Length: 211
Image (cartoon, rainbow, N blue to C red; front, side, top):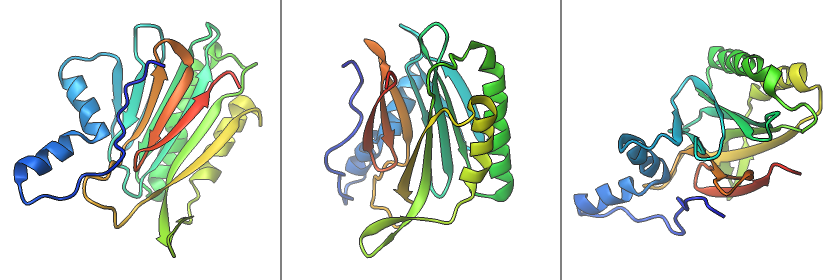
């Protein structure tokens, strides 16, 4: 597998030394990716707040798309197969405001409309929600959130019910220092059907787009 390992096994602790804290910040997954972009890496795409972007994942081209700063925000991503066999990824990052949820749904619809002629409808796309939860008695529980009711009709418009859905909750509050808030999609450069999601808190999910 050819995917850069961005996750840390143990979060660093807050130090009395500012240089150590700065190094800990710079080693957060989203900071590593941002540095690569600044250095001229054209294979990485960043999705800002209240933004939705779509990319074609091609050999020796874009292989990573990610969001920064999910703190009570909703990230919605869709990964599809193009008719050329290569993935198409749409990723969005919007605030939890009611108007933002409407904008998130409409922006996703626009991107799907743009690529609709090129999507292989014989393959089931993957829909990913990365949404806030809250800790209760040591367990992460879902917050009330109607983003699902906004997004599902859009997906059904293009794919009927022929898609796979994943809901991944993240801790929205009371997070420790240097806790990554990124939502990262990395495609294996040696096999574009292999996708690694690194969600908020550096939780790793491995997806096979052929299944």
